[in-house]
Length: 163
Image (tube, rainbow, N blue to C red; front, side):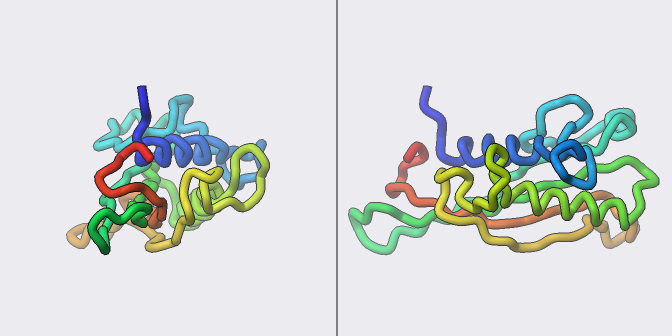
């Protein structure tokens, strides 16, 4: 069964995030994700799940694919993505900043070669950093998590999800 380009991108991002382990040269083991695969669009965690381990979730927010001309081929898509870091209570801001750094490094680093690769192994044209920081609800001002937001740029034909 064919896999959409968006799913290919999410799959590659999950592979990269899973490499975040001290044994691989990172500062944390958050890529272990409590012994589970990196989550694709998790909506909520139970408190006991966060006691086991910090959890990572991959979210693709929107995809812009403007077509400039009729019958145009090779439309540039911009897929807005976010990796969210869900942590247990008591995690310090300094620890969370380290986790953010590990996520940023893993996103841009090829998981097989260790080289910088913003093309996700040739699946996309480029990745562009956007917002990075703590998730802070305005009514409590407590740190609920962290997010690393970025845009993934890739080419497809108009109305094609598989190229």
